[in-house]
Length: 243
Image (cartoon, rainbow, N blue to C red; front, side, top):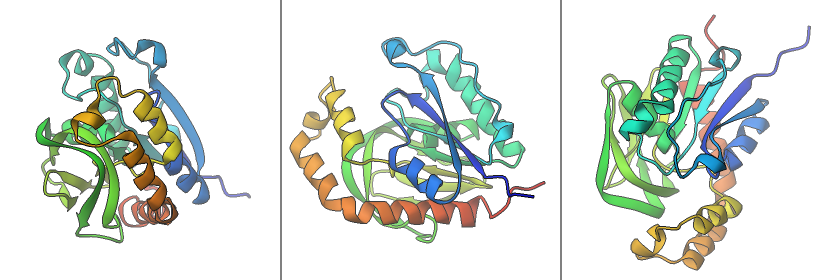
């Protein structure tokens, strides 16, 4: 009898925050990759609203991705953010592994009893991340674009940080990341084109500078993302799903 491929579901919370390099890394590990768009492009200006999510039960891993809104926005918490938080709790209860990225990591913090609030110092660009467990989260430069930061939930273990913010925590078979491992040049160009509020300029950076740095690091980024995904699957998710 042939082995059934493992399946990963990426929750694309905002249409421009796609799985990018993370999708490739999971595919290389033998996963079938599914995506679900939570807030489509036509609703970006008014993102609150009810969403019917897929059943997480058919998946081995759920990956909630990034978005530009605060996870604590009341109109969102009262609609799809609240629903997605319950989905993540249900997935964890069912033994499904979860990997949260930026907004997705903050969702995990909020869903499991931590808190999320405005950070005194936003992070945009490439920052060195100090890791206590490099076999799970390799230390070094990772791309950031966030204005909020979390307090890890009760029972979680913080495993990486910058001077400004917690960057990763583990809780059971869940790993939350504050940074964006998925970013490549193409994804960053989309984000820069959508930067209507001038976040990059306000942070004292320019678009060409960010793109150049991303290109310079591209040769190392792929292997480090593959290492992160292998580390997550081995040390957090475990090799097999609990029965």
